[in-house]
Image (cartoon, rainbow, N blue to C red; front, side, top):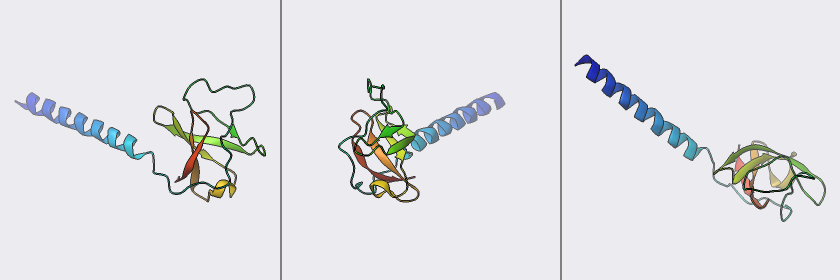
Length: 113
């Protein structure tokens, strides 16, 4: 009988841990706070690197002035990435990141870190 209780408890604990992992992953991508300002149509991959998939790459460059942004994290099978930018660029403030569509290089908006 003791073995059955232990197995049931272990199964319940495993189920609880798995549900926490799923919840954590879902909540890790924060929502967009507001639109970014004065952004290019798309941010470009470094010279010599082509976008051949939806994967996020870094750093990315603003083709207008050479501003470089660095990837912090990616989500959704790496189709969306959050990037750190130089202070004040694109309306991004302290503790915020710029969200990018990694497939197109299009800026999606500003998110909290």
